[in-house]
Image (cartoon, rainbow, N blue to C red; front, side, top):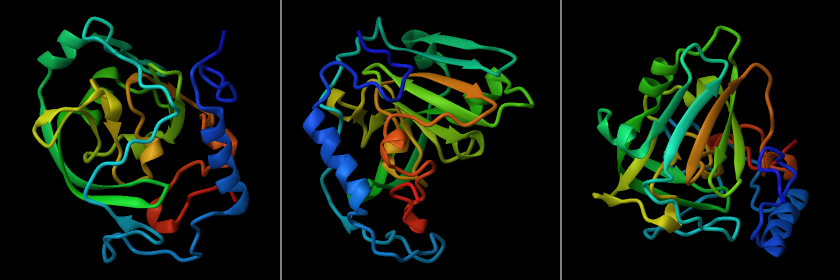
Length: 225
């Protein structure tokens, strides 16, 4: 049995060769240009290339999450823990976002249209405690990642159910995935299941394998220093 709460654990079904390749990228500093950019001036982050499709990247697992199984928990250091079923999520106000996305594997895609749930609204419902400073996030496939709470609680972030007018497909993280457009896309987990607010930072799956703790594309924070 694997332990999805342990970021060092490889979830069952993971393509180990793929993971090792990505670890080597971090060890070698692959794709690094050694430059930075200003998101107010430079739309394309350093070292990125534009694509018009949407590449599929995962751990080799694409869980089939039915509507009956789909839910979102927000727990940890909150005054009002939430455990929302798919029906309850769908009953909440739906919002749209338009943004660019950037993957650490070097591709960027401009002008994506999303629909879903406001992250800031959900966090406001959960009411973070004063000592909450970070979050860990867990997906249905066992994937985990972490963020400073300040990076999650931003108005442009969305728990997305739709992309370009259609439900997000299973391969891209449907029925529910996070979109945090100002950071590399590994910080936007597919098939998201749980957001836990914590006081101290706790690295996730890629972060313990040589990837940067925050992942700002314009600062080229691909890998740990």
